[in-house]
Image (cartoon, rainbow, N blue to C red; front, side, top):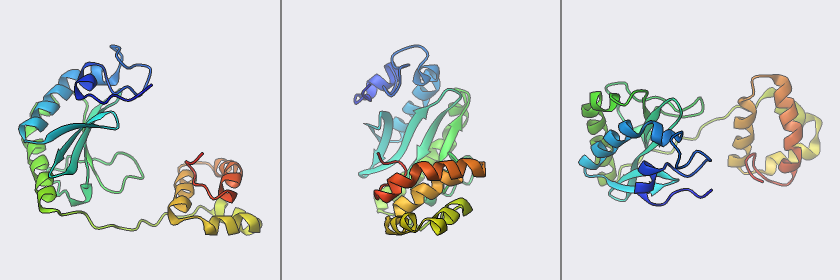
Length: 208
């Protein structure tokens, strides 16, 4: 199924990324009222409305400012360059445990958009100001801890250790991220066994 490329399709049918596309059960349709209000607010600030990754994306001065998305239990507005945002109202949340900065406003009721409208508008203008001035967040190198199970596997398997050392830092991090998400040591050990061939081939955890 192909993702939508026309902005109006998103608000009429959904993003096109799953079988619920163009059905009443689509997440975008479940939150149609709230997303319509959020769309109007974004347009009112003068942002350019585009489609990226099947979702409404709002731009200014050639930079991505924020992107809208809907899920089963919420819809959200996610800011790019979240490291710059001051968040004086403490409304920004992290999307997940591996998200470096709080970057989204999560809505669990359609009327929250109107309630938070002054704050949302202020945050959008703040982000637009950074884009207009060409200000970007500094690159921060994240240290991803290598789990003990992977260290033990590398110590016991010289061929694997050599191949892992030859991977790019990004590919090494992809394995560390994946393994750290497993709660049980046995799960991490099993994943390492499955990853061995990919590591030997010089691929990252998400590569085929």
